[in-house]
Image: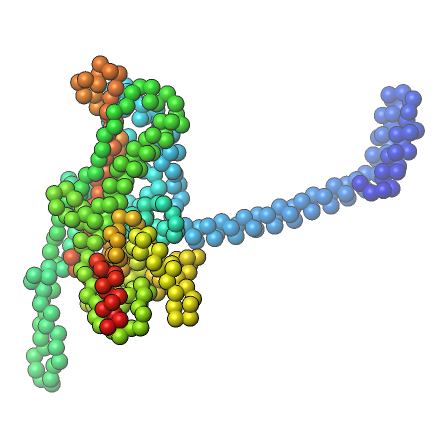
Length: 400
């Protein structure tokens, strides 16, 4: 409101002191008619200014949303484990304590492509940021959701039959018959593996929602998921174990190269080049897998000019993302093209309940969590990975 309008309103207020209600009403109406245009113009200015500021805020929000969408690959609808457990609390209680039939499936923090009949669709999440105590290698590998239409407990796929494939390409002189290669495909089957654990609970367990959600997260994350994480890295493919990425990958053999004071970056470049030079170079390595001890040596390493060779803010080494996973053995590392190491999952974590005989008298039941999955690197794609089981020894060899 401008100064002239304020002055007129003040004078009107003094003038109306002691007047009757009708006189006051008439004076106010006359004031509004006289100053209507001024008031309307001021309201219009305020409204236009507000609309400009609102548009600027909306433009800023739109730009921020675009950046977030570019940063996160299809994380739409993702929920934390605790949020999903809270949402399904009543279902969990029915399954655990009320003899309801069926299971409760928890699908938290796992964006996957729905794949029917083993079609090769998959989702690649972001690289885990350095320093995160998240699920490391599990988070960065492609996920394939095995639909219910798949047969039983196996994943079936077609691949080269290396045993009968003949590669006969050669130089051909004029008038000479061309050599003939033989390329055959074969069907392969890999069984899904089941990871699970149990926990006895009482009815009082679920009475405090926050405590119940927290306890379940500890149960599911620590007991089941960490076992999965270890199997993905180290499973030896015996019994019910997964074929982990280290046991599925061929070893890198270091060659004397005369490199002065070689470091982990030099070794990474050598291993990467060993992969890209094999079988037509269809592979493009994008990860280096190490544990925190090896990572510490990398972070502290300096070049000949006393400059650190690794930038933690970028998180790459020789152009490859560094993934820190404590399941990796000391003095070991792995370089590979993660597109060719896929995690097949039949379900999310499934919670069910049971009542062993003695527990019925003690007002207890047993809650069970399980997950069926498989880590698959096809036989022909194992050359897209290299493991180093003696980093220190390999560095010595590169220096010789």
